[in-house]
Image 1 (spheres, rainbow, N blue to C red):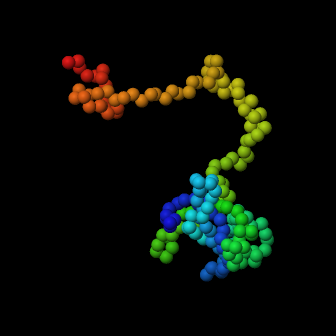
Image 2 (spheres, rainbow, N blue to C red):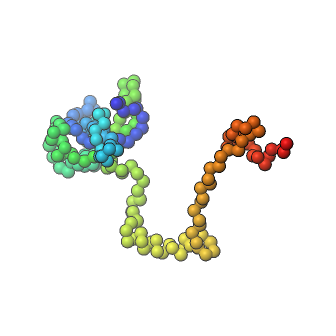
Image 3 (tube, rainbow, N blue to C red):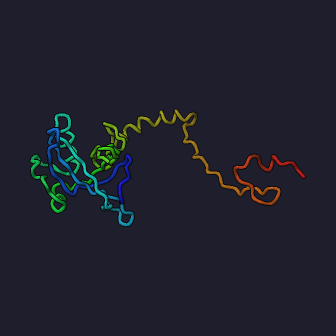
Amino acid sequence: MTLPIQKATYRARAIACGFGVAGTGTHSVFVQCAILEYSEMNGDWRASGDEITWIGHFTDAATARTVESLGHFGWLGDDLSELDDIGEDRIASIMPGEVDLVCEPEEYEGSLQLKVRWVNKPGAGKFAFKTPLTGAALKTFAAQMRGQIRGARGPGGARPAPPSTPQRQAAPASRNGSARHPNAPGGNDDMPPF
């Protein structure tokens, strides 16, 4: 399988890592990633066979995000040389984390390729409030709001009945005996009597 050249987020884990210097003189790190897929059989993430490379840069503007991304992979050290040219056998202990890779198409030398834009914690791309409201604080807030919610519902403050699901009826037969389409205009009441 080959990853499609389209915007997507993939679960992944590191399988190799190394360093280099770009033509601009920027020091960079690469992390080769195995794309994972969810297995319905056992509820685990397993390698899909696809791989993609993330490249992080060590510039004034990018170093903090590069270090954060390495942390998402599970690296907690401060000596980058321990990541140099390590393969899958050793990387599992140094960078054991699973990440979500946000990928987008990018033109490079006249052709489109898929590029990793962001390395995030799994599920981090979902919306989250800066200050979550959970646990005891949520219970307290819910108790404060109970009266206002009942008032917003009108007299009696009762919960409205859940909407009923209409039962599907068989389509009425047409004059020639075949079934009418349920969305056909008009109904039996529109037909003149014989």
